[in-house]
Length: 409
Ligand SMILES: Cc1ncc(COP(=O)(O)O)c(C=O)c1O
Image 1 (spheres, rainbow, N blue to C red):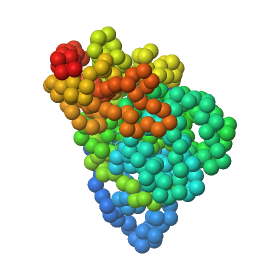
Image 2 (cartoon, rainbow, N blue to C red):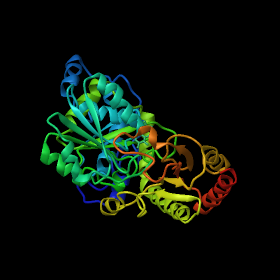
Image 3 (cartoon, rainbow, N blue to C red):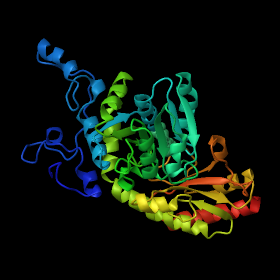
Image 4 (cartoon, rainbow, N blue to C red):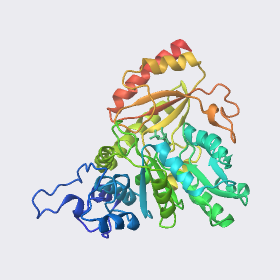
């Protein structure tokens, strides 16, 4: 095993992260293993009452205390996720992506504060802000995801946090994260800068290095990668880690060692999976772009996507999730398209090895910007997740779906 201080490329860090000798054993010991095993425990036993009493006082990472503080399986995953995000100091794990978003927000907001949130945020992030946070006296104001440095005009004395998401949910606008972070810090150095980085992960977008304070992942998607575990994480800087950790501990946040182990297993192959999702999704997005029944393809790596130049500058790759806007049609025709597909499942979530297709309606969750855009009154949107099937098979399936759309339109 290389020492943790050795310089390593991102793909190598995915393989080496979290494999401490005290959790796996070393090759010269009998029984050494490659991956930390599932370590199941609620109670940890102490040799005497003096040791028992000192346990809660230390509250250090990587030290046995009680099951709620985790075990080597969860610690190994947290450490490997920290290694994924350059500039990361520590990672907290959560039982879902939404729990990670809410846990991060609760660690930086207090009654009376104002939160700025991108208008393209994942719908449940908005619901949490408009319902739960409002009930506790925290106000949320939404901003246009293409705002860039213009965000400074929205910052007031009470603004304490910004929640970015890039690219945005459903419509995939790419945000200028460095410009937003610089402008916000210039206006108030105490503002906490949070980003939902689920689409690219730290592997394709180094959010903390670009200026964010917390990089939030729905690990349910690409980290787990096999559509069988709910999990979330927040990786943050040395400055914000103590309060993130304190909040998670106060809320009793814990994830099961089995789920952590599955996520760690998924993480090891993230590089090859993401590269294949990228290549297949791009092939299909370009095919759709040229199709007469498609008005627009909303994929950050295509010039037609708002913020494409920012994607080129800040990201090292793209993943498998994007949307397209149909040329005319009706709800029934869009349903016919999706129902005709045989290789695409119909269901929520994404990031697994399999392809998915759903109809989406961004208008439901926009307030600072409008959808459909001016001049496109009937913009019907389909969101695709491109899995690891042969992209030519997926294109053939989509061609049949689009033929059904034309017949029904
Ligand atoms: C961008 C984004 N963030 C967060 C989440 C929430 O993750 P989870 O489903 O694990 O709660 C999702 C889920 O679809 C998502 O798409």
